[in-house]
Length: 381
Image (cartoon, rainbow, N blue to C red):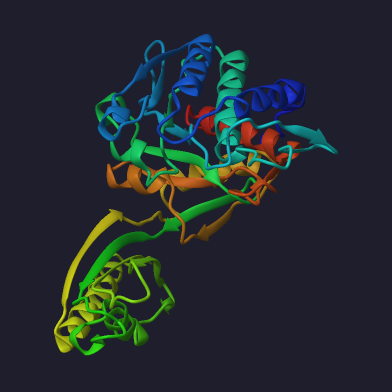
């Protein structure tokens, strides 16, 4: 096996500076235009052709997905490297702090290593591949918008701009080497129970309390782990206007996730059936709906993609750690388009919190991994 790339150490200052530059550009879901413009220009400077789709127009955002493609003729089928441009709140006004080779926020915001670490790694990997080789790299880059808002950017992606049939999404917590080879399907559902209002003190017997009906339905439903591959939850309940009125309407929203597509839809249907049954027994009405938000995926460890990923991780000096996750990334959507993808750990910790951080060592390892994925896809050892 080829020894580890030594030039990555020379990029340390540049990688840190670029990471800190990008996290300071505000980029909330639906408002990624400023960051999209910056990364598009960086791709051009590296020597990529840049394309922008119209995904944001589909859901009211101000930017589309950014796609980078190499200039010249690729000699082999490209690999797609993907990360997302947006971040969760509080993610505006980030002030990155470097101490003891770890980057944190100022403590009043998130850091946005999720997913600026992925963006930075891909950009650094591309620069290395272009500077250390005289070839046209067989790689495509996708920086999506509004990933944190129901994967909307990927859902409205213009796939005609891509040629890749396999790819890696730089967007998982945990150390470099962690690979999400399996992720779940998600079904969301809503139930509105419609009862009958009445004065709660003068004539409560004339009312049908929608809250009570919904409670009866929920009392026998499984929450949390339904089985060893399926979880279910109701996370939002809205209803009632006054304590002296029998509540005539309550709306509940929840989700089911499962590594089995059929299980996810089956359990969601069972939840909604329970509300209909309880409503019918009480003389109330239940209006329900469910929808698939994304499909799960499972990538075989003997696939071409996994051989490439394992080999690239090995060249960083790490060992591949294949795992199953109950979370979703753009990889879920890309797999549904026929682009075989896995999500890769990029080293960030305590994401979606003001305690979020990333070790510089992990940021550099992610950049090295991106480089080896690119060059490994050219047939280089």
